[in-house]
Length: 205
Image 1 (tube, rainbow, N blue to C red):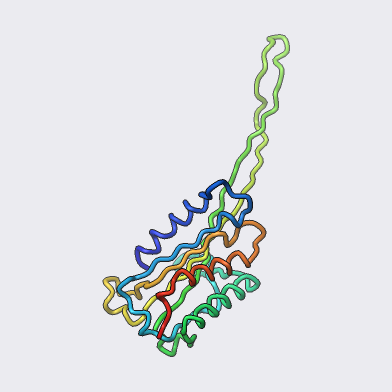
Image 2 (cartoon, rainbow, N blue to C red):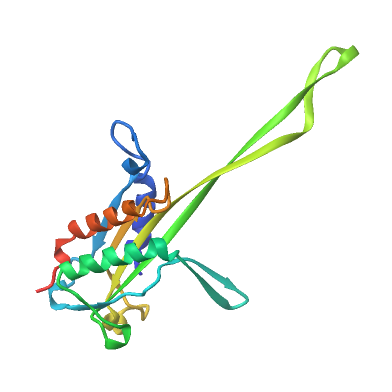
């Protein structure tokens, strides 16, 4: 991934809170953003590879890397929606060992916000006639989690010409609202469809 992705994610987070007239439903805060390399020739490509799972977290402990994957009940319809859109654009999905023209990598990113509430008991000072706080306080904690789906198209054949020797991303699609609300996967697939609809330049010959 290049700087396109790092620039896209903060915008997703900011726009998620902006809705003209005020949002009535959680779906009203969903945002779809896409970015692409305008000099890249998508029409010359025809095949792509995509993993069968979606990474949502990566842990590195003592040199060992562990991946956490999205539950199949959510990942399967999301991957099916991506594959359907790629087929409509004229691409053929192949195994990564078949030297595909493009690599499509979806990933889920989450952010959890915590709220802490402090409750104190009052106590009366009796003879001295004053009020005060009772210590320690009662503390309650609540939280909500929001998330985004990020889809990255990269050209594996361009790695040798990349200054960091990695496959450069040629298209990035971001869909927020993935983990909010009632975890309705339809919100994610609707956003995926929109991301591809606003990217007609991806279409092959």
